[in-house]
Image (tube, rainbow, N blue to C red; front, side, top):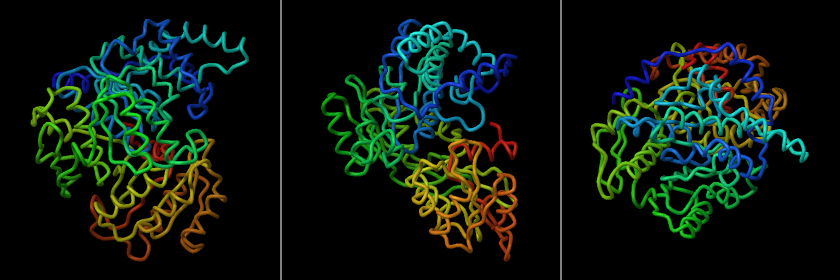
Length: 465
């Protein structure tokens, strides 16, 4: 708990080189361009003295819920007065969000120091890649190595590491995990991970390693079979949702939900989680089981007071986040059908809004129609727009898809995000769209479809933390 207070009091150092360093890293291949080999990252780590082996690791993969679950695991571990590192992706506003120590993004000065630490090794491997006709280390490879080095330098006791894409070839998969977590697997990133649920699950299963305890969220049957086969082959200790742990009860509460959670160790009651939706309750159960596997003796619980204190303090920016009231503006990072379905259910359950209008921008390589179909039941109308990402789908093209789902009369277009928000607010407040909704008036705006879009809106509205 002392470390929790220290993290909140840490001053934010700056460095004049930060923008140039970030620009240089961003000029590399983006994280969705996979180099299907871990050799370069392994060599980089070896040249740095294998920093990723100097702390205990909780390694997470899955399609939805990874970042929220990672944040919960980290918060639970930190409540036990252990120093923590957390590596998540993508970021909402600032790249430093990806590398956190004791729950706080590293300062800009610390980010630059991490780059200085790894730059000589990165230069060696870049030069060799050029000789072999290969691209330089990617954006994500560099950030991963920087995170490993920063955590070793801190030093942290436990690092919570989220995969970026898949698992088997994911840059993070050079760690030796104490606990492996696989959140729900669904269809996403088919261009890189496979065209079937079994293929995608096979990629996620690549982080399951002998010697780890594997915490497995409830899965679709096709994915579950693949994950269970991998767990059996690696002879791991397996903890399964629905068998060994789960959500016993949950009730709506002011600002979130009140949970009873069951784990192998026992039952935790009256746990207040300040996040909305059944999916977040599931994430909490998964995270608690992971923390218990890491910290508790077999068959025993964590100290209940510490669990309640940690989960009550959890935040997950950009995940059904209330960023403004009167009218209510909600922001969510859902960018695939599974995430959008969970979002729609959570909105319907937790917010009594009389008229909800969507602002949606989706990357062109996603299942755009699937995302829109999942959101359609909770939206009166929709304003399609684009995020700041170059991968964001053209507004006119997105409007065509939206019209097939919503009908032409319910679809509006705005090329600029600020215009889209203004239009959505006006539409939400039209026809008497005011009243007594949770967190504000009965008129509401829901922004969804992209992590980048969620970050853009948070920045536009001044939510930078």
